[in-house]
Length: 559
Picture (cartoon, rainbow, N blue to C red):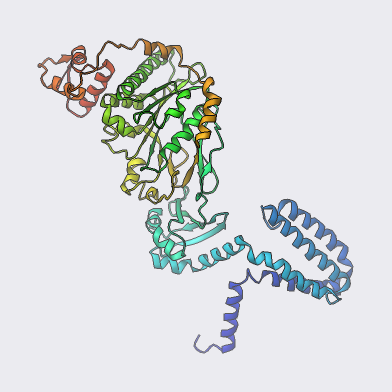
């Protein structure tokens, strides 16, 4: 105020300084409080020292065993709390019985305040808590500067790697507004780039959680602890979140897509999945690696089949469709809706490394893969596909990508690739995979993982692969008799188109375009394309959905 006395202004400024430095002054305040308490007790209740001694022993024991009443968790912190409590209680006991001015009690108190104050002053978590308190105090001004005016921090907690705060937004604001200003928040808080994470509060649209990761917990590789799954129904441990929680993902009856740019760690994630599935006794593994088996060859002893050429890939996926058809017929006869996986009737997981290569060099395999993606989940035939950029062209039209319920997004080069791998709108919602800065770091979108939380996959070394293969190669199950019979009865008489012949899809379109008004039969289309019946049916359904084919009568088609 203009007419306020100078002494009041000085006292107010001193009070603000003392309040701002209250954490640093805590040891001195405790020392003064002990001296005052000792003086009062010595004058009024000098005989109460036995009660104080017993209370001191109980408090020190509680602080050492449980961290009470300080709420500490680490053993060093509990030891410090127990020692401090014991000394403070012992000094107060002596001061109550003898008086706080009796020599050498004053000198002992001063030395103890300094000795016990040093660990307090240098403690990292205390200093972090002070910084957080100052951020909370300054947040209204910071929020006005970065365009989040009206928001406020309700509470904050310091953890091992930084701190997290619960934020309440102004009416009309949403978590999308906060995500769009993450860079401005990092600048206002003075943190390193990429340190701020924002998560939606599932219970309230006007609240969110802001995490500030001061020290990157994923700066170094995290070695794979070994397989933790023993059944395909068990969740697979892929890696670790930034809060040290394990990334656990169920894969049974789910198709998975792993996307990321070159050297982002796709092979590492595949190795973690294969290492866990190799230890499961109720799953058969097939692999497709059109890079000559470079990625999947080390796992060959645990793979029932490994396709390394386009023709082998087409045959493998065609056999998978035959397994699907046989299991669907059996489930229909038995009136069951799902195929229960057991060691005698195992699930089938098909691992495809670099799916875009398959779509380019073995286009005849794409319809089979799409059929497995559409129908395989209930029948325990699952796909696990890895690719650098899952565009509609790379994924053979996009029908397969839409069936992937587990999405793992590693580092990408372009921001738009985030929406390609995860789903439309994920980039705006805070899934910033383009900012990931090390191989193996990823975001995951799956059941139970709907928040943009960064994780890092385990590192599976060559030695891990050799040990896992040597341990579980002899324990791998075989396909059930029903599935084996379906594969054995697959018609093999159809010869693949001669080298230089037209593409089967183009041949099919030509045949439909030149068909008479009454259309062509399915056997005629099979003869024209040289493909199997299932492939012809799948392509006809896709062309009919696109308005490019018409069923003029039962079993007869034309363009």
